[in-house]
Length: 219
Image 1 (cartoon, rainbow, N blue to C red):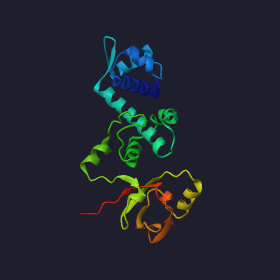
Image 2 (cartoon, rainbow, N blue to C red):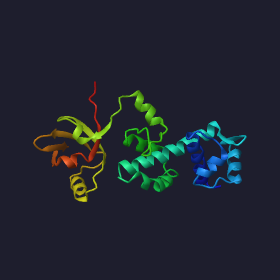
Image 3 (tube, one colour):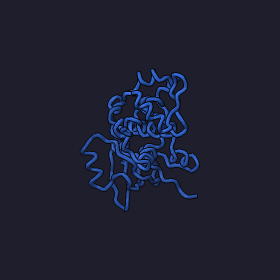
Image 4 (cartoon, rainbow, N blue to C red):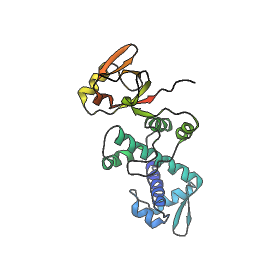
């Protein structure tokens, strides 16, 4: 049986549970994939669920697998909304595709990139991952607009949200792309950033489109 179908059903069980029900009829009603008897048998066979009367309940293994699917889906929604500027409604279909193909390390990278978001664009909880737990144990750099840095402070470019191609091309032509560490040289009267002794004057509107991980000073 196709793994994508199993994951879709696990996702439906999770979402139905969030709404306060584990009823099989409710799961079938709200699932975007067909929850056939064959699918249920496959879930039971793989010890992902158990049946208690009319309820379909996760096993420990099933809950962990469903959590990972939900996490990938909702992080994909955040990526599409926050970085690619898609509306919440536009993200659903693409996020459904993403959730089946994101490797664990890519999922963690997206989560870190976005600053460990706690909810998806629809307000549903994003289950935390290893990167989120580690972030709580350390002094985590926060993804912030470049304009939040003060003169002399540095940050690594996380992403650029500008939808103006001329602006983006200007930045890229100077090598200012994700992964580059930049520092703010001055903010007034002109906003100037610097990297490897290369300085670039930016309009404030452009600087607001650049998001960075703030570099913390060593103690």
